[in-house]
Each structure stands twice: as C-alpha cells, then as structure tokens.
Length: 135
Length: 277
Image (cartoon, rainbow over all chains, first blue to last red; front, side):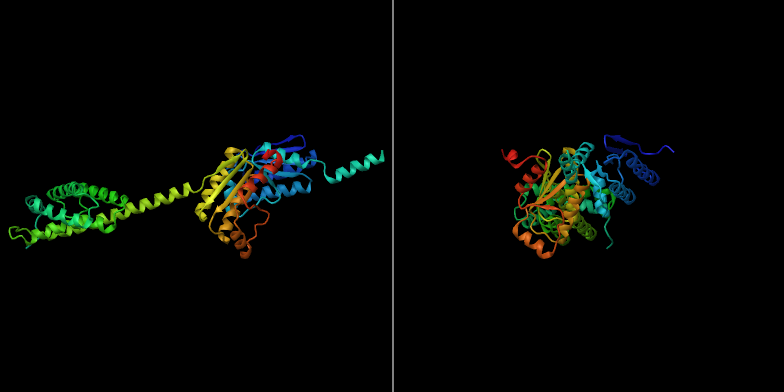
C-alpha cells in the first residue's frame, strides 16, 4: 500500500502536506501514522498543510479535529494551514469546526505560530529559578 | 363578409398609407406629450409600418408567423429602448395601439371595401408583444442593477501590510454575505494578510440574522488562519445587540475602525508607539 501521506520532521515539528483529495482509508492511516510519529519523535507541533485539498467533507473535517485532539493528549499543538476559501465556506455552511486545531494562512506562518508557543512557560521559568538557587 | 386575404390587406394599407400614418402619428404624438419628437416617431413608425405591410404581403396572418420576423425584431428593439429611457408602460404600448386610430378611419371610409377586422386583431397582438418586450427589458435592467449593487457595495481594501478591511454598507442578507465572504477570503489568500476587519458602520441595523451572517464570515476567516475583528459598532447597535441577547463569544469587537487597526497592528508584534511614530 503506497498511498500513505508522507510525514516530514523539521526540528521538533512534524509537517504533513496533503496534496491529493483524501480517501477515507488514507485519512485514517494518516491519523494512525501521525500518532505513532509524535510518540517516537517527541514532536511538539504538527502542521497539516491542506492547500492541495479542494474538497473537505465532514469526515475529513472530523479527522482534522481528531488529529488535533490526539496531539493535544501527546503534548503537541496542531496547526492546519493553507485552507482554501471555498473549503472554509463549505465548513462554515456545514457547521463544522476543527475542534482544538489552530489555523494559519501558510506553512511559514504556521511555523511562526508554533514557535511563539515555545517561549519558556511559567513552569520552565520556575524550574530554572529553582536550579539557580540550588547552585 | 369573410376575412380579407392578407394580400388584399397589404394593398389597402399601401393605398391608404398616408392617411393611416398621419392619424397614427397624431394619436401617438398626443399620447407621448412631446417626449419623443415627431421626427423620431415618424422614423419609428415608418419602420414598423413597412415591416407590417411587408409581412402581410408575404402572407403572414398572426404575429407568430415567420413573415413577421422582421416586425417582431423592430418592436422588441423599440420597446427595449423605451424601457431604458424610462417611458411608462402606457406610453410604450400606446405608440403601437395608436395605429388603430388610423385603421378606424379606414372602417368608416366608404371607398374601402375590404374587411380589416383581422388587421385590427393583428395590431392588438403587436401591442401585447410590445408590452411583453417592454417588461422583459425592464426585468433585465433590474437584474443587471442588483448585480451591480452587489459588486459595488462590497469592496475589500488593504489598509496596512497584512491587514484588510471590508467596509459594509447596507443591509446584510445571505446572498451578500456569500459575496463578502468569498471576496474577503480570496483577498486574505492573495495578500497573505493575517488580519481582517469587518466594519459595520454602514449597516443600518443588526438583528439576529445579520449577526449570524457576520459570525459565519468571522469563523470562515479563522478557519483560514486569519484574525477577524468586527468594528464600527454604533451605540444604538450595541444596545440592540445586548437587548436581543446576541452573544459575540470570543469574536473581537471594537468601536471604530481605527481601534481595530491599532489592535491588529499591535497583535502583529508592533507596539502602538512604533505604529503611530
């Protein structure tokens, strides 16, 4: 079976670029592969580029939301990028949302969005302070 | 007396052309109160008259016959032109019905031995046809104008690097929302903008339906990865929104377009001081 969607790793981010219209089986396979790759690579972010998709039905919409939820559980953020205007309008008319997935205009901005999240959290700052005191 | 043959009718018309035309022209000119000059009317009537006589000579009995193709074409053109020039339906129809004045004169004329009843019926048909063409032209104008209005009233303007705005003017219905949404989303992609501002200063009233349309647009822009702000909410509108219990949720709303722009620039990483210099 060679219809799997490639998952590229860039730093701590996984990039999935969907360039063909998705079959349901391919979508499910992608969902499994992604969960697998997030755990093995410890990625902090997932960018799904759907600029090649002309049709997004309720199934794909739900798949995107599920992927976002799965990565959330595995401590990674999901950004859906490059949605076409027609697709956005269809999703709104269907009353679908992408759940916890965030959106950006293109891959560049998606990466920037993930980076801005990676600024040290309050917890990390506290940990650093504790370490310094220990020294 | 049986119906006269179309050939005979055409002969009668040709023979009495002058008196029929004069009566027709007088009646039409009286009805139009000088909206068209006599010369113009005369030219128009010459065309119609010649096409009518020609059609009769070719054996046409009803307006639908192929012999009257040319006549129908002329009538349609004349009516469409009248519709565009803003003539009333009565004025348009009377220009043709006035021909009957000329024909009545023939009925009372003892020297005319032909029965022209069928001719009168034909003129009625012409009048109805004129009227249909007139209504059709009017419909076309209305459709054309409403399309233009839709296009005109929804510009999407780029007001800063990465910020586009849609100043909405007039009421929002689902057809307009669709146009606004499509234009806005396409502009977001074309300009690579991350901020969209929908300014509703020109929207006279916001009810639950209009709010629903605004929501859809904002949500669609978000799906594409852009921030969307609604600005230009006038005090009365704010009151209506609250009294109707419309929830704007986490959608950003600002009082003026300037506020929304400043907001967009600030969240783009630039401080207000930097922006305003």
